[in-house]
Amino acid sequence: MRPWMWAALALLALPPLLVVLSGWRLRLSLPDQTPGTQDERLAALLAGEQLVPPPPLPPEVFARAQAEGLAVEIVSADRRWELLDAGFRQRLLAVYKAMREQGYEMVLLEGYRSPERQAMLQRQGPQVTQAGPMQSYHQHGLAADSAFLRDGRLVISESDPWALQGYELFGRESERYGLRWGGRWRMRDYGHVELAGAEKKAAASPGG
Image: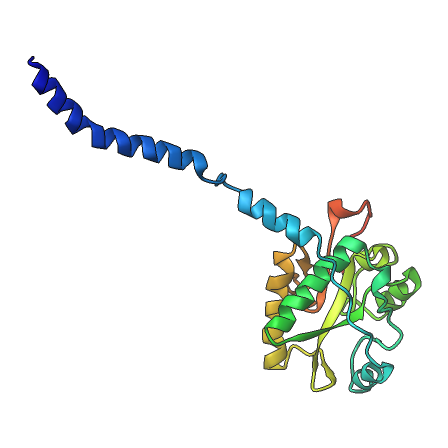
């Protein structure tokens, strides 16, 4: 082949070669895009956020709700957030935050429950709870009962369409954060969530 033909071939091959080399250099300069990198960074950011419990409501709010005919006595229920397991507390507060952003203000009705109170509730019948003392996650700070606050009043009954929609949303948000929702049980407990099993070495059975 004549020399001028070799030169022509070289000129024709040069542009594709430059494109390949440029792409190779571009790939070397790109940041790491491997799967999971962004999720890990996001998880690391969220891990540093510690949500703070809301201020307690006046006792009259619960007394008024009790006077309106609740089946379960809530006035003397324990609503101290600090008695809940730290991991469970953060998940529940994250659910409350998500609910607030969608128009539902949540209220903690009961968190930790003493074995004596559990026994008292069990005596009221299976429609209240089937769990005896030390058979509920409440005794381990791993369960909570919640309701809604609307216009300064507690809304607990699922017969209210607004509340029923809220309970269903509460269930979905709770499950997103790894909580078990009582609304899926055979005897539905719409306001109840719990963090069970491996999170604590507690020989407990499900139940309000």
